[in-house]
Image: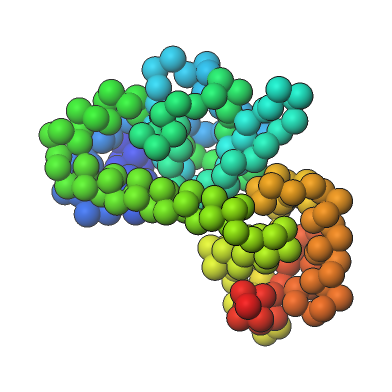
Length: 227
């Protein structure tokens, strides 16, 4: 990839938005850009160099396979987010992997060792990175609190509200989300079963709280869903 294109990808990435031109060029000098297609995977156990991945565009899901061979989805990564060998997930199970959900994504990647050296050289980068880690930690805390204190229907409603805030687009009939998750994937994200999620989605449809199809989810009143 040309240096100019690398520079503008990094310049427009939220985490690096406040860095100087010199700092961006330092990032460019050690960064590696990768294009990946839908359904391709990154298995962290095969990544001996312990890499950080910055998602330039697209969507990725982070999953783990349990002892019975069942997939457990741990997170959905969107444009501007990062994953890999980050401090709050440094003890990654060998079964954990990232799978591409979009038709194509662009990833910028560094080894953790390279990135740590850059943070030592540029304290402003270390500050931005620590803020990003704080956001990810709060997201984990919110998810765990939902698991402990909310029943399945409340968890589903909370998940839909969060999804709408992140990716919903205003329309005449409410907030519209492009639906790229199956009932089974939603169930995995909220620690439930596919059958239960299907039943609850049908309940929400009957209540008029959501309009649901395989391609779109419309939320007429986000306040009513959040209540």
